[in-house]
Length: 496
Ligand SMILES: Cc1cc2nc3c(=O)[nH]c(=O)nc-3n(C[C@H](O)[C@H](O)[C@H](O)COP(=O)(O)OP(=O)(O)OC[C@H]3O[C@@H](n4cnc5c(N)ncnc54)[C@H](O)[C@@H]3O)c2cc1C
Image (cartoon, rainbow, N blue to C red; front, side, top):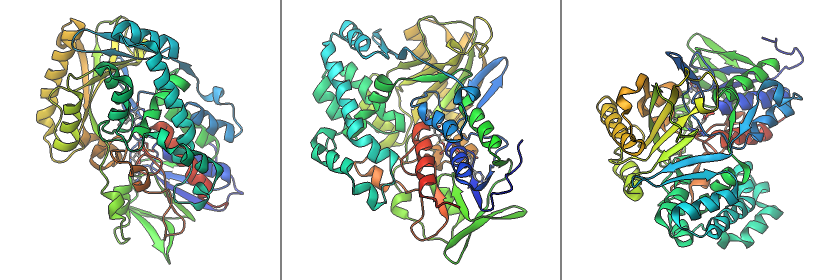
């Protein structure tokens, strides 16, 4: 590991080595801070981690990689060639979709091929899909930069030519409709509407309540593309940690921060079990709710922000499957037959759905060595509510039976006899491993048109030197937005 550069005199301390913590460490190091990252676990990455079991490798958390240029930008910023650290492939298929009635549809990355496939399989004129994707691109161009790349609590963000342009086209952003209503109005065909509604789950939201502006998300998949690092998702973490270490960032594992020290209205460092660490900049990558409740209980918490509805969580089965399924790709979705009811159960009933949509991710399709010859590493996920007292020990076997029944029917197989190794991850475990409130995957949901404004900003209005980055703060969850939160926060932190 390279040693700290002696000319760096000002200390920045980062609480948590999640993806936003690592990216912030890189940016602050380049900016001239001596950076120390304290991580409670004995590994980096938080949700973006992996494990091996009985000859299979599993990415434990994120499986969909979009906007890889945000990762590349960190290497370029540090004057390094990203390709010396990691490489990735662009996928020609973004997802394979299955419905209970036997319909199967391949979402080709290429927009024309995708539109043709929709026409062939669903009987919807290709032009409808083309127009929908054009609209997604236009929305992204009009609003993406403002809501994703800038701090919303700065006057300069709102006093700009971009904002004037956006305001002039406000009606095109579908702010007053739900995502579902906007999709139903334009696409009509129930299966196609369900397919486009699914993008709400990309930040753990409910398409029947999230505003139509989120319909810009498909542009990321079909306009920019979906990707996979050569060695799987975890390589994003490992390559960025390597870069940070090359820059002199110090990672301290098994080091849980217990308190943020605040002196005279300024953040002054952190306290661990047997150590006090002084710093000019304190940046918390811990979920914002426990950041207030546990690390600074004496500071008045912004209750309206902390009480925002959380994003959904997930129940995941990692299965080593001793068979190869040629009809499956890297990303596969098996839709529920009643999508509205599924989201009502998750967000209103706060109970797992009776007929869940099942997502199956198989990296061994693209990463040689992720599964033994002739076998596949299945990451099987259903969306569930955040933890609020459910008995997951009871729910896990119930869900396993339900998922197997659904997949057996569609794939005409006997999965129970094909699973040769298994691990599970429930909301309560996600919370235990990462401190995310209730095990939410993406911080707060976007189930209101005000959600973007009610997300906690990347700094504290009254405490100098205290900053935040990660999925629970602006601009939100998911790898690309976490990387953008690191960029925004590093831009508002002053030069050392
Ligand atoms: C199952 C699952 C699937 C997902 N799928 C996708 C996907 O396909 N694509 C996508 O883009 N995103 C996906 N996401 C979301 C994405 O993983 C997260 O938004 C992102 O990784 C969150 O990063 P973060 O920087 O907020 O930190 P986190 O990953 O939440 O990590 C926070 C870190 O802080 C540490 N920490 C907390 N408190 C302390 C403390 N007091 N002291 C020291 N350390 C502390 C924790 O141990 C942890 O390592 C998924 C998430 C999950 C769980």
